[in-house]
Length: 464
Ligand code: URP
Ligand code: ZN
Ligand code: ZN
Image 1 (cartoon, rainbow, N blue to C red):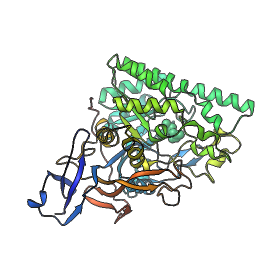
Image 2 (image 1 turned 30 degrees about the vertical axis):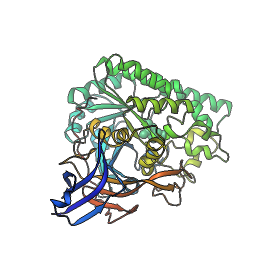
Image 3 (image 1 turned 45 degrees about the horizontal axis):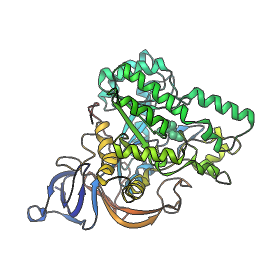
Image 4 (image 1 turned 120 degrees about the vertical axis):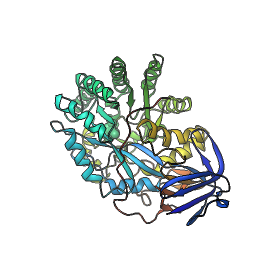
């Protein structure tokens, strides 16, 4: 038996906190309490005096090695999950994306090939449905049996990923029947495409026109539409990477009809504003993602919605592309800049520093939106909270240590960072993944390629 004792830490859940110990046996939490050393013996004692002890972070929105816009996202499952472990994210849910015309089975098998034997953190898959038809419908229960219980859809990226409303309705109905959850990239693809077309005609093709081609109206319209479609089928719906006040307002309206809507935002939408698109020397390309970075007023609305509990999770949409060799494919035309940026390593530290330390969010809410809600919304029954019998995914944070984000020291496999130079307070020091120490004093420790496990998820069964 392998026994570890974390002693004298400040232990946080989504609802409580206290100073105490966590006892870990063979990868599971075996006891939580005070003075556990008096009762239990351990092979290793980890001194957590002065440190915060929280459950392993769960990033419910990543794209490792994603084939996209003529290239691949720069982190694979090994480098991406290793970066995650450094930042206290011990589990991810990545998107296995169906190629139009192919089966869901093929796409999931392909994603297993990318991840199995490579990932160093635990991983699950959402199945992204880009082509819903009679055959795909029959595959829904098979996916759910395999523990892939959420299904992603895109209302933008026409011709590649986007599905129409008829397909959306069919999928929502089928997924509800078998107890899964549909999630949505909500942007009106036709509005986006017509704006891109117009900017091409006008010859206005610098990165800032990417943002102008993805207005809040496109996001709010699609979010409203999909909420209505889900409401029609009395199905829950999860809206990914919500970025703007207009969308949030529509969502809040729909809470009034008791609709089960779950809202994700991402760190970048809380922390950055659209002035990034005015940076010189094509630097704005680093921030080209969909939806784009919004205005300060949208940040205000997002923070407020987090405080009120209207936003349920903070993810990253981790989808990195190198500035040199990938982002610069669109030097003369913003629509050729691969959409996405890195974030998995710094999600916890950024939100801790900018949210908790700056008084915009309580520590309990932090644990809820970073760990507990992603686990319970997506059926990760063994994760997301520090409780007896759960996986011992545990993160120790020094709440006062200062550090600076830099491309020179980050673990993302990419040559730039949208948070370059950000000075943060609060550092992830020690990380346990299923009871194994994988980060010691901020550095990876005895991490073996392929040690991450595929996580079969439970059916949707969550209420607030
Ligand atoms: O710009 C983004 N978000 N890239 C990744 C794909 C997506 O839309 O989530
Ligand atoms: Zn998206
Ligand atoms: Zn995404």
